[in-house]
Amino acid sequence: MRHSLLLLSLLCTIAPGYSQADNAPVNFFTFTFENDFFAGKDYGYTSGTQLDWAHGDARTYDEIAPHWITSLARPLWLSQDPNQRRAVSYKIGLATYTPQDISDQNPPKDDLPYSGLLYWKGTLHAYDDHVADRAYLTLGIVGPASGAAAAQKTFHRIIGSQQPEGWSTQLDNEPVFKIGVARKWRTAAIDFDDSPWGMDLITHAEVGAGTFESTADLTFSMRLGKNLMRSFPTAGLLPGRDTNQLAGELGNDIYFFIAVMARYQPNAIYVQGNNFGGKETDLTLRQEQYFLSGGLSWNRGNWGYEYALARSTKIFNNAHADQVFGSLGITYRY
Image 1 (tube, helix red, strand yellow):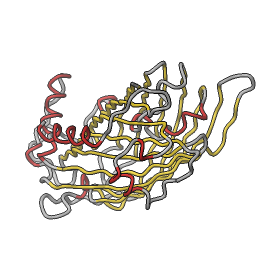
Image 2 (tube, one colour; image 1 turned 90 degrees about the vertical axis):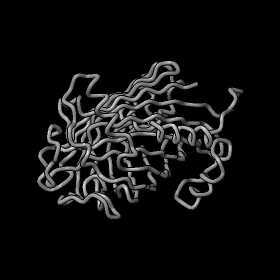
Image 3 (cartoon, rainbow, N blue to C red; image 1 turned 90 degrees about the horizontal axis):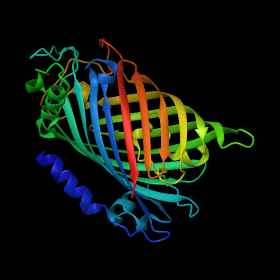
Image 4 (cartoon, rainbow, N blue to C red; image 1 turned 120 degrees about the vertical axis):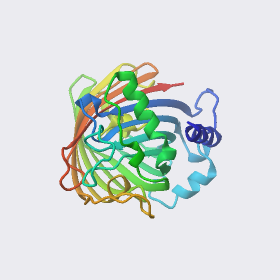
């Protein structure tokens, strides 16, 4: 809990406030909850909780973000097009990974180790009706300092589920980071005559590298819904992981989606063990992975709601099962 409060203090320090005057940047708050109890089991990526604060609809980054963040992002590929809108989001989150048999006090070395990640993430966004760019930095801690053990035990106690017994074997404390860039294109669109409803296809490419994990993703998503043109910046494999900057803008709108993703992943601490000494595993990371997800996104007034179910192929050789989990995101514009 102490580490969570420290990250929250950092977030509040670097995220400036704004008045609600006309044309001022608008503010968003998002809570995202992910868990594999939607699939009725605990295995692999078993849960994630995220809190986001975002400031959007600005003309320049200097209006909404501290200089040290904007100066780091400018050398990356974020567009400087003055016609694009800008946003910045800050996130604190906790991600939890467990082996298949959580009743075993000494999990075998041929299964995933217990691990948790407590992290802060800062992201700059640039978007218009057809292209959306992101650049992000993630800083975190893996190990007992993450608080994942207490968080999972408490949640399982609340829902009356099996208590995890092997957290004493989790990865050792290690600071980690990940930096990355991403771009989305609204590749194709069909608008229905005399109707706000339509369909579109979105292509999403993302590359990230770091000591927590490194990934290269290519995602294709198809959507059916209302006012799709302006909502595409938050569309993706799991929309609830991005602050829904359209909440409060479009009135009562909804879209349904299905997405597929191919991933190349050369390293992942939650599979391979600590990078610098500490706990090791006997696992071989499966570098080529595939994901499938589907769900809906709904905006009404100042509120936005997003729900998705996702399934991925095995993340290491000889894994017992695919990864399956659900994601629920709630956004409020204030």
